[in-house]
Image (cartoon, rainbow over all chains, first blue to last red; front, side, top):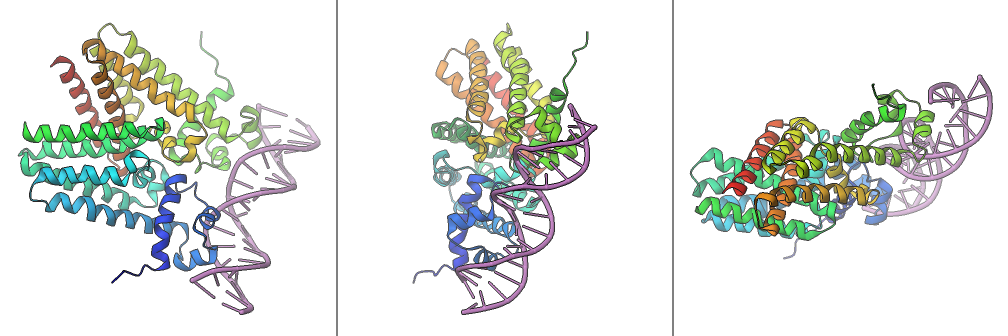
Amino acid sequence: MEKELSAREQTIPKLREIFRQNGFEGTSLSEITNQTGLGKSSLYHFFPQGKTEMAEAVLHDIDQWFNENVFLPLRKSEEPVSGIHHMFKEVNRYFKTGDRICLVGAFALDNTRELFPSEIKDYFKIWVDSLAWAINKKYPHKLEARKLAEETVASIQGALVLARAQNDTKVFTRIMRRLEKRILSEIDG
Amino acid sequence: MEKELSAREQTIPKLREIFRQNGFEGTSLSEITNQTGLGKSSLYHFFPQGKTEMAEAVLHDIDQWFNENVFLPLRKSEEPVSGIHHMFKEVNRYFKTGDRICLVGAFALDNTRELFPSEIKDYFKIWVDSLAWAINKKYPHKLEARKLAEETVASIQGALVLARAQNDTKVFTRIMRRLEKRILSEIDG
DNA sequence: GTCTATAGATCGATAGAC
DNA sequence: GTCTATCGATCTATAGAC
């Protein structure tokens, strides 16, 4: 039995990519109508609060995806190493090996973050917490595991910045490989 | 003999902070007139091409600062370790221990980068090149030195993202300390 | 160089018919 | 749910007096 997606739900992935390309302030409603094919009235029908509600829905969607495909597997996998490997694989896939940016990170950089402070804060907190938890299972020093997790998440964000700046996805994949290798060597060593 | 700064030059640091707060698209001319005290006519007198020229001037100003205070010292210092230490000290100071973001990184993330592609590309290229050069002086594996430099610059960018997202500058200083320590241990070890 | 005034486009958002 | 029409505000940018 296929899940029927409402028109609202079908719109969210498109909105996500539009915000990713243009940022929150750089995205206009007419751009959204152009790229979604939905008129303004339809957009306001689905998202009565307008652009802010659209971005909120996108952030919620991103949050769900990461919870399901990254954060929970880090907690659930029997073997932390495989959970961590799974994280790198999924994150690499999600960001299309560096071709896509992280919308949450982009929102964090300018005053857009004041519109969605808790969504932005929680996304990174849960990511760091989950990764730290997985590392800590193998690596007994709790504080050090946390620092390693924090640095890894930050480096992934920075790798996206550099890949976009240089317009070169290889920068991203290169850094991702190093990060995974470092975690594994810290855990095993 | 004091250097006389032209009115245009005096405006640039203010513009820099305004763009940092709001992003390029999020910055309006009326916001600029409010925060600089200059009327629109004065702004267009100094920057005939408008907002784009203002951002260009800011990027050029940032570029100069990093060349003078970070990139050249990395090349010039007799002892690479002290050049690298100097980089971390200055970068930490420049970003006010994580309270400020990197405007070039922020511009890179959305389609603002299409307005200033070479400025954005060069900033990171020169940074990575200079750091790789300094590392390579002590650490003979050229390719590995480059990768370490690339990862370090990316991690600094990511640390800024995380610090802003969490609204906690300690995240930034913590990661900066780890990065410097790692480079030193790779060089010495 | 700076002022006032304003053009012309686009912004987010809404009303009302269907 | 989607259409057309439109509101008032704001946007970038310019004109012309001083």
